[in-house]
Figure 1 (spheres, rainbow, N blue to C red):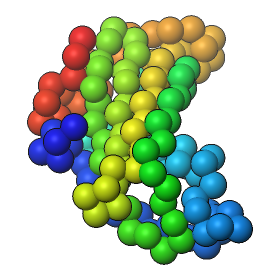
Figure 2: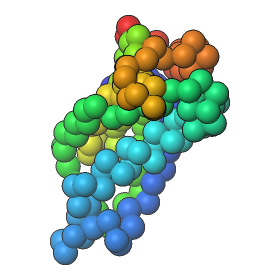
Figure 3: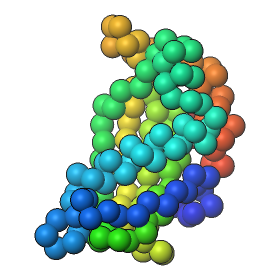
Length: 145
């Protein structure tokens, strides 16, 4: 995707503890990078997690699927540009799209699907209107329904 489609872009420096003996990022760390970016996304949207989601509306988001596509490896001390957007906003689920770059080189494409649910029952629940409106207002490219 074009950089202009992502309103959120955050830097992340690869640390020594995240690489293997070849100084290449261990594959599992990319999901951690996605999670860090997800928290920054909520801040950028203007919702403090968990206060403005779980506590305010009584729902939470649970990962039901995560997919990473590896195009090239990040290495120790690389400065990554991690971009994210909400690509889909359903009735009770949302899709978080992430891309990671080193300069202009596209390293990783990720997609994480979350379902909105009642934490007590862990049953699917509609995404609260306030959350939906904040996401929609923030995005440059409106999420698919």
